[in-house]
Length: 138
Image: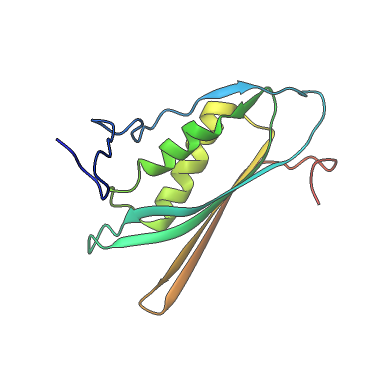
């Protein structure tokens, strides 16, 4: 069976990846040096637990690794796992922080959920873990 816009186009029978709550990690290549890693995921979505309507956010993650770093594809699939889940902004931001702390045990971590305006109100939730080493930050 052919699908798609052009004749003869072939697509894989199933999506090559799927959402998961597993966060993969790898060894920090410079564990003796405190340095900061910053990531931004501008396409985060979850559902409003009251209305079922989608909530859109940019998730910003900044951390100073200890022995482990988070692998980016697993982080992408992890964030994707919230797409069909009802969650208050405060809960989801705290849960992302807790899961990253459990997986990596960083020296310091900050997760910011910058949720788009709904009903005239935008929400920014910032959650931190640990103390930021002076040599790693601004």
